[in-house]
Image 1 (cartoon, rainbow, N blue to C red):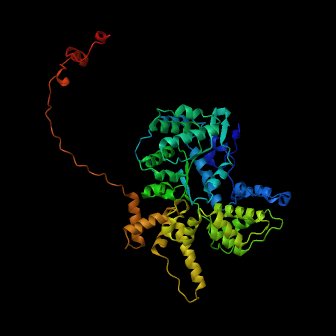
Image 2 (cartoon, rainbow, N blue to C red; image 1 turned 180 degrees about the horizontal axis):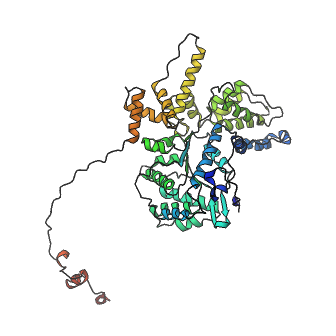
Image 3 (cartoon, rainbow, N blue to C red; image 1 turned 30 degrees about the vertical axis):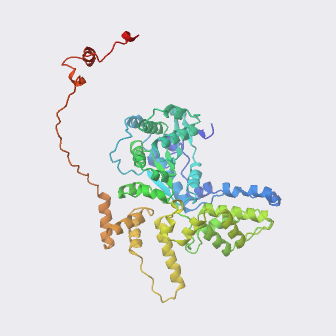
Amino acid sequence: MKGFVTASYIDAQIAEYEGHPLINALPPINSAQQTAQLVRRIPEIKAEEVALPAHIRRHAMLRIMDGFLYPTKAHLQLEQTISSMIRQGYLSRNISDKSYQVTLNKVSQMSASDNRNAGNEALVSSVIGCSGAGKSTAVEAILASYPQVIMHPEYQHYQLVWLKVECPHDASVRSLCINFFRALDNALGNDGEYERQYVRPRSNVEMLLGDFARIAALHSIGLLVIDEIQHLERSNSGASERILRFFVQLTNTIKLPILFIGTPKAYELFSPSMRSARRASQFGSINWNRFNAALDSGKGTEWDRFFAQLWSLQWFKHPQPLTEEIKALFWDCSQGIAHVAVTLFYLSQVRAVTVGREVIDSALVKEVFNSELHIIRPMIRALQSGREQEIQKYSDLEIPKAALIQNQLTIDQLDSNRSSASQVKTEPSKLVQLVSMLEQLGIGSDIAPLVAEQAIDELPDGNLLDLIAHIRQLEEKVPPKSKQKKSKVVKLTPRYVDNDLRLMIQENESVYSAMKKAGVVLQISDYL
């Protein structure tokens, strides 16, 4: 079947991976150069297509939307994270060892309602970034480099290397389980067998989560990807906490790595406590920022390289050279969001060939942006303002606070460069210094601003050392159990009425016999 391969084992690349069929059946570990070639997707422009009429040529241009992916440093980091998580998760699930059956037995005894602290697990990571930045596309491109299902005839085992599940819009546990079984059926070609078997009208949440865990262990899922995790934030019924607790149980019980993908709204799921924030970033939480326009050591920026590659995709008879004016305009209109930039470029090129003037100038770009992308214009304006209170109105396009701090530092640096040479630079704020110190202490760059801001709010007059000590106390603090006042028990004397049923039953007498003697039980034969 499509996506199925028979296991072909390679030599273990490090000592820990020796004798692990699930690991050695995977493709070799990629270098950064191999990852870049693997992820890169550049659409082909055929010479004969340039001469086609405009109404046909615009169909060929759709390759820009569907087939363009330019690898960045974030893609390389993400590939290394996924590669490591899959292999580390398989270390304790060796199908050639008898301990594998022990793991399966643990899952059968696992309770989805277990409220114990699951502990800190290093098999959870997250990719958080604004909508349209290319998070899901990047993850899918990297997962596509792995066969999804590997058959091990020697062990009579089907290995599911990865499974991507979308978090339901209603944030319900039942809907999540349904999505899981559907994704599983699609991957295994089961034609809905698992969904029919486990999702029944009388299946309660406890049963569904138990089946979820057992099937995940049975098929040796290497990586579970949960997309659109920010949907859990909409739940006010405790479902969000229950789902997150269940995921952590999976990582602890069967060592199943889990990768969360979501918009910055998902930070609210991980930030209520220091412990949950650490758990969401222990394997290297990836802050999938939009492109930064600040200079990068004189070599240009990733935005420069990204847009130069995008600009080369012209179905014009006489392609235009890229100018700084056009590049700056596209940055202003897209604010570095990859999907917005690609869409605006495609629409501008379509408009240019449609009107018969194969030129993309500033006037054309502004006209297309205002007329065809007017729906997202308020969100882009909020990002252009740089004001956090404006950005927070749009959760999907809200950039992380770490990026806001970095952008402010960049603006300050540019302003300083424009000012006279004698002007003294302003010392970085306490928040910026604290964020830098937390990152050096090992807290992820996406979580550090949230932790720093919380600490400063709670200890506004403290110096940096006081704040660090305060944060360490917060990490170890366990919320005390609330003492409930014991209510006084008042003994009540029962009050009986005539023919009270409670008085009919004598000692060593059945209820039925007592009620029959009293005439309460009727003989149905008397009425036939």
